[in-house]
Image (cartoon, rainbow, N blue to C red; front, top):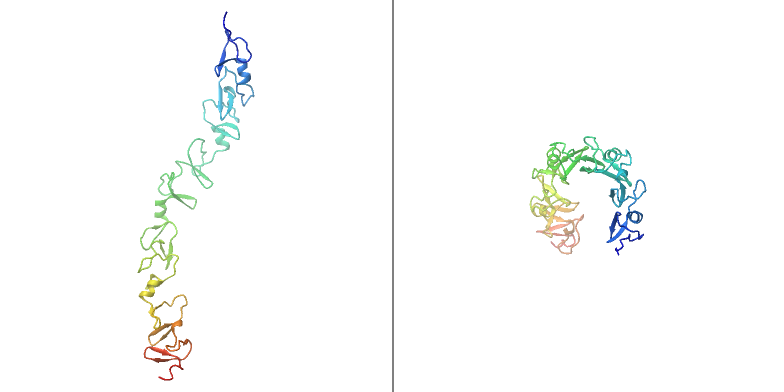
Amino acid sequence: MTERFDCHHCEESLFGKKYILREESPCCLACFEALYASTCEECGKPIGCDCKDLSYKDRHWHEACFHCSRCKSSLVDKPFAAKEDQLLCTDCYSHEYSSKCQECKKTIMPGTRKMEYKDSSWHETCFVCRRCQQPIGTKSFIPKDNQNFCVPCYEKQYALQCVQCQKPITTGGVTYREQPWHRECFVCTACKKPLSGQRFTSREEFPYCLSCFCDLYAKKCAGCTNPISGLGGTKYISFEERQWHNDCFNCKKCSLSLVGRGFLTERDDILCPDCGKDI
């Protein structure tokens, strides 16, 4: 007796018929299409075993149904783009959605590399330095007046030159006596500490931090011997080539402040009138 060979689902005999083996179980074509065949996105009909099943992102089409949603041209073996669940040929997609190159004004076709900056786009070959015409690619660039420059060209054409090192100032910088400096080049003439953002003064047009200026040039207080900077509104008393801080101009004996008062001198000392009576 011949062993039976039936469809796993409907149990009809498969002898002499086409069938599909699914998970090691035979299945007649009718059952396979009813249970397992994909449904075409375009026509809504099953994609039978005798048809080519074209798929894209878990969606399926008959070969004849796989066409552009706009112009209906076939997309089989052709590049295409997807927009809002619609498939479009490259011509239709570029006409409706592709960016226009800022330089040549032509469409940037899907699949081609484009460069973007803010709200503008360029073909990779059109994104070049305005001065040297070399492609910028992914290198740093500087925009100016709606034109793009590679960093070396921008520095040659526009950047200010530091008075100290004579190199271009590309970011930040300090202006002193109407001349540009790099922040790191604008330092104290004596100790070389940076002066940017710090209080400083100058002597013979050379900048100094307050500490160096006081040590080098400030007069010394006859009372405390510390420098009198005279900066920032600091008040001091001057008498016979000697100077005092306001707070140090006191009677040697009773320590009474003599600012705005009469006083007497005894050698290097200053005295209030009461303490000076016995001189």
